[in-house]
Length: 97
Image (cartoon, rainbow, N blue to C red):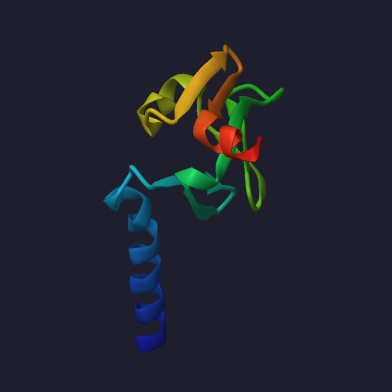
């Protein structure tokens, strides 16, 4: 029983990482898992051909999750909606050039 309690406590703590400091982390739910991604690692987010889904491209790959670009306006000044289907991290992209 103590192992189960420890795993539940660890999972609860992991889920709260994205809630504690939203200026540095972005939290998404991918299938049954919660994924915490550093904002500085995100290249861009685009709408998916599947309705109500977005595709997030970051240093470690691509993730598909349910949301809309309109819901992501809180991500900060580093993100710019350059098109109705794209939200880019312009600071990150400038560093790539």
